[in-house]
Every structure is written in C-alpha cells, then in structure tokens.
Amino acid sequence: MTAQKHPIIYFDGICILCNKAVRFVIKHDPQGYYKFMPLQSTTGQKLLATLQQKPGTINSFFLDEGDKIYSKSTAALRVARNLSGPVKWLYGFIIVPSFIRDWIYEFISKNRFRWFGKRDRCMVPGKDISQRFLND
Image 1 (cartoon, rainbow, N blue to C red):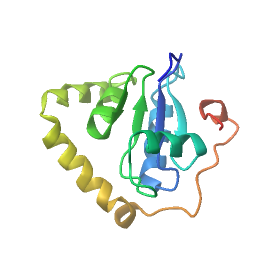
Image 2 (image 1 turned 60 degrees about the vertical axis):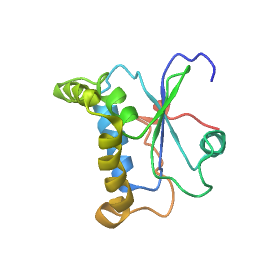
Image 3 (image 1 turned 180 degrees about the vertical axis):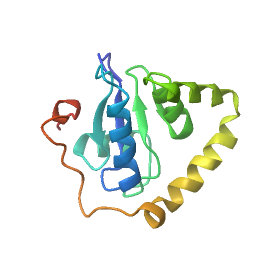
C-alpha cells in the first residue's frame, strides 16, 4: 500500500449494522481522521482481490493504514483507539488473543443481516459527510 494522509475504512455498504458503525465513527471522529470506501466499489473489490477474499463474500471490514491492512476485531479496535470519548478504551481488548476476538466478530458478522437487515444498494452520504467518503 502507499503512504496516505488518512486511514481508510472499507466497509460493507449494504449492511445496516456496518452503516451505523460508519456513522458512529464519523460522530466520534470530529477531526476527520478516517475516510471511508464501500467494499462494493471498484477500489473495494480490488482490495478484496488483493487480500484473496472470495468474490461476493464480504464478512469483514478493513482498515488501511497505508503501510498495513487490518481486518475483523483488530481493525475495529485500532479504529476505536483514535475516536473521542470512552469508546477509545475498547482498545484495551487488544490484549485478548485475536482468535477469541475474531470468533466473536465472525459470529456477529455471520448474523448481521438477519439481526439488523441490509439495503438494496450502498448508502449515499449526505452533503454534511460526503467529503469523508472516497470516490473510485
């Protein structure tokens, strides 16, 4: 990956839970540190291919920090540590072995559509947050 000014969060654009998580990050990231890109985008699909993910299977979100890409619980905890408020304390869970954290993450991921639903297409950000979303 190349050097970049802002970390990029790649997320499932049709997942309602994922969209709520993006809105949560935006709310708790008033400095605009993070940028966002749906995995359904051309760039998102290229990332999935690079990471050798099965086509059409989006079961994680990814954090691209320029020099390294993180996924699942590690990505979530790395995002949390840079947010405002008490949520940053969640980063302390990084000491829990990743196989345990990822098992919980995968359980939620496998059930997210059933529990929270999904949209027919990716969310379209409003004018107030559109600058946070990258275009292909």
